[in-house]
Amino acid sequence: MNLAIPTPGIRRRSVTGLWLRHAVSFVRYWKFVITWVLIEPVIILVAVGFGVGKLVGSIEDGVSYAEFVTPGLIIGNAMFHALFETSWNAYNRIDNDVYETALTTPITITEITMGDILWAVTRSIMTVVGTSIVAAMFGWLTGWEALGILIPAIMVGITFGALGFLFSAVAPHTTFLTLVFTLVASPMFFFSGSFFPIEILPDWVEPVAWVMPLTSAVHIARGFALGSLDMSHLWAAVYMVAITAVIWPLAIFLLRRRLIK
Amino acid sequence: MTNESQTKNDAVRNLNGSVIQAEKIRKLYGDFAAVDGISFNVEPGETYGLLGPNGAGKTTTMRMLSGLSPANSGEINVAGIDVVKDNRAVREVMGVVTQHDGLDGGLTVFQNLFLHGFLAGLSRKASKNRAHEVLEFFGLRDRSKANVYELSGGMKRRLAIARSMMTSPTVIVMDEPSTGLDPQSRNRVWEELAVLKDAGVTVLLSTHYMEEATILCDRLSIMDHGKILDEGSPDQMIERHAPKEVAQLRVTPASLRTVRDYLNERAITFREVGALVSVTGVNGDRPDLSGLESVEGVRTSYRAGNLEDVFLSITGRELRDE
Picture 1 (cartoon, rainbow over the protein chains, first blue to last red):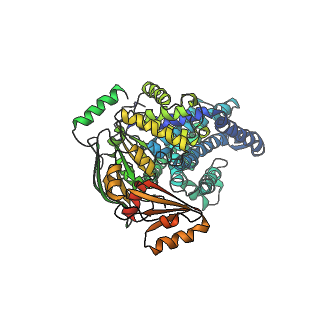
Picture 2: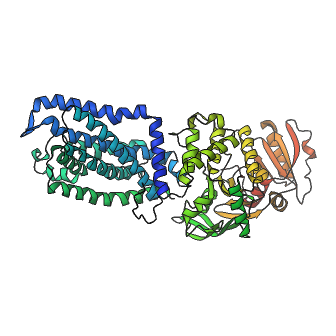
């Protein structure tokens, strides 16, 4: 983490300390978590790639449906990981006074979100790398350019890591967190161009789809996967950064309101 | 406890003043003043208690002192640190035991300590070593690999106290160290706090158990409705506010009416808590209860005045009423 970037007021130990806490907990429960990191996305990948892919054939010239859907599924799955970490898991940490205890050390709310989001990014990378290797073995992800998928993987970790806090920080109970999936994760997963090009949606739905940050992430990932990068991918990246610049400070504000009484 | 903490302690003493200074601190929630302009000092090596019922403002006071909650007004100084200006620095020097143990269920006993020490700023090696030391001291070494949810309530509490000792602090605040514990566990916590006190650690604790306050505290404040009503050593407080002696009548439901009538006829003030009627004499004289000796189902005994009586006398209500 020693990147020599000046970070005024940020105590590095707070961020690495929290990250280490998540890593230690992850290692304790890896047998269970690994099923979600690797087994579940591979199940979906195989079902959609081989199953639906057989029916659809090719999506555009020279691109099979499996090749088209792979970056979408990989990035969509990464979104679930990032969101879950900072909504469900973070809510439990609020509820069980884990943050309250952490705050008795010299840590700030901003650093808490940084440590947690760094872990959300870590989870995103783990699942993206694991699933990408499997997809590559099936021949659905080829070429060195595909390594670039790590870039949207990191962005998804940050954006959706920050977004998850908007729910955990205001949730009165765990049932409330169902909204993360019904309002955010599911609509994004299905309407962000993971499964089909959003151009085929009705005209009025398409702009809505572009508002959802996952659409941009999938777009970038597909650009790397299919080797078709152009300026549109840069704009997608700019949009993700911009929306994160709104969400993250809001997350800090809400979490501070919840924890510092 | 260690050389390092000894040096820190000396540094604190060299300031030639109080470890904790709270000056007219106030905390508002909307219009409601949870803490209403209280002031007190805690001297080096002292164990100081905030005694009061739930809702008196004890927890809010401790949260303000440990930099977890900003005060609306007032001045707070802990070990030379201006807490209002720098709430981060105070958390480097102070150990905090929060009201709910706040243990991390995703980690083992050892990991709870190690990761807390690391987050607080110890190197990995130092934190590991310290975690072993602290586990040894609190008699939790054989539970080091256990999940925290496997621990008894007393062990959880002791682990939470152990955690606050990870950085070898010279001053710790503890919010109700023994609430909810069985008598054995409570005694154990008290013994361990006594050892910390011997090691020179300054302790600020809150409690609504007068027994705990009597045993542990050098000095204490009685708090109610966000205010400090009086301050002193337990003995001073008892001398100031409690009767020398209180007669306690253990009554049966059948004899209660007779007892009430007898006391009312003679205009003797009394209070009832369950099957216990407490009678306080006037000007230190024993009230005349001779007429009750023959009443069946009444057993009379006398006890010395205690902090419970102090609280009653100052606030007009029972400490145990919450």
